[in-house]
Amino acid sequence: MRDHLRLALAGSLCAFSASASAGLGDTLQTLRDNLQDTTQRLQDNLQDTTQRLADNLQSTGQRLGDGLQETGQRLNDNLTASFEQLRSELEIGFARLQHRYLFPTDGTIAFEDAIEHEGVGRRIIYIRPETTTETPAPAIVLLHYNTGTAEDIANAVDIGALVAATGAWAIVPEGLNQHWNDDPGSVSGADDVGFLAKLIETATAQYPIDASRVYVAGMSNGGFMATRLACERPELVAAVASVAASMRTSQAAACAPAIGVPMVLILGTNDLYVAYNARLGLLSARETFDHWRGINHCDLSAVGETALPDTVNDGTTTVVSRGVDCGADTALYTVNGGGHTWPQWTPTISPYSLGRVAKDFSGNEAIWSFFSSHSRP
Image (cartoon, rainbow, N blue to C red; front, side):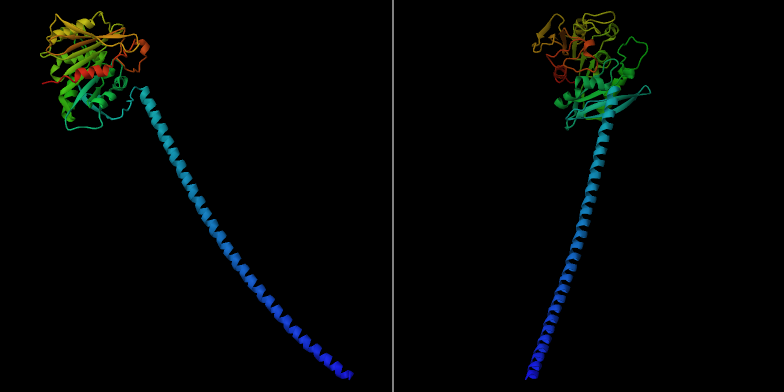
């Protein structure tokens, strides 16, 4: 009996042992499978993460490269622009030191030309309206003062603003050694009458300029030259304006134009360079006015006078004298207290050495008002 029990117990133990072994094997297999699956997932995730990191690093590197390239280009562009601005400012500064810089004016275009006369090239600055019309435009030949340049006088009187406002052209030539040979009694010097005549004839032939409306205005030495041209070549000019200049006695003696020339004079009573009341070799302002009244066949027994409104406390007042019953209009602006100046100008020369500047009226506007009412037949 005991043996049967032992045998039964042993069989049960063997059966249980076999069953346990089988269960443990399954569990271990399951663990191995899970471990293998987890390992595979980890490897896949690691590979995917590595690829994403590589892609992100490449993308970041590309963005950094593009950013560096763009930053470098901007720096290069900024350096180039700064250099160009500096170079332009240096060129302008150098030109201004040489009195060769023309201030730009909105609504105008400026260019330079040259004419050869007596074997010498003579420079001319043209300032024209930006917008042109089919109708030929009037033109003002503007003559600089002694030692001045074409740019000096154009800048000082702001002729560009007049061009923009009126549609007229400005022609600004330059005398040899910055001087005009205005004295017909001089035995030497340039043929400036011939040069200016050639300039006017060339300009009206080459550009859309109305030959019947060419005017000449000059300051100081340029004013004397303007009246000399009127005396010797009156057929070329429709009207003349002379500022801070009277007439030389030699010029007055030789001045006998075959036709009248509308003439407006502007002189200051306190001019230390061209005395209003005359000095040796010059006519007074009144004598110059009377001389042109005679040339222009005015009634020498009468003069009309008008005081301009004294609107600015500048130490000056102005009276306008006009010829009566003239064949060609003749006028004199007497600037009481005025110096060797152009009304409302901004000279490059120290104003203290030139005297007071009239601010009550614009020299440009007064001259253009006079010019625009005249033309040659």
